[in-house]
Image (cartoon, rainbow, N blue to C red; front, side, top):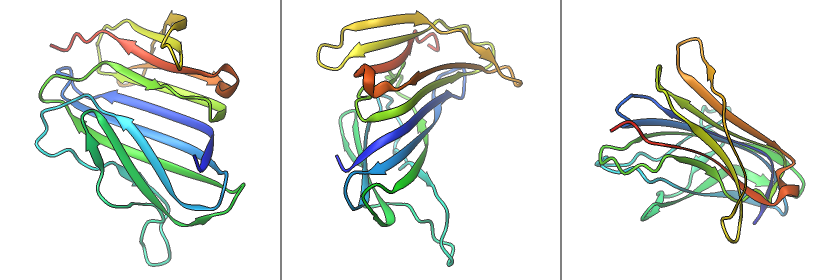
Length: 197
């Protein structure tokens, strides 16, 4: 791995009560372990049914000509639920330098296959802070659980129900923040029952 992560934030929003439209944001505060120009992100998406899955957007500063510094390099690689993106950072990041990479995804699940989990299963490279957030539609009564699990056996070592915060527009925010996740050497996830159908 060419980077270690200082902080990571994952946020998933279920937009509609029919559970067909999703938005997510993922931010990575990176520190280069060696000089590199590329960042590789792999993730899973279990939704289905959209005819053409959009490539995630990158939120990036622009250069003097108006072009973004960060660009997705090549097509998104898809195999089953697995997704891989290669990001061109626009310059070579030197060893010890920092960079923030910010993704926005807009997704559809018209086939009803979405697995209601938001996970960061490998936190061994995250040194300071990990946040996982779930936003549900207004009035969605859900029980959301937080789990920390071992990497190798997927054994649950901690679990608890997450208390929601009601946002101004009535949506529900569920959040779990883990400090110094590297020391814990565990995966972390929010999981809930799918009552949308």
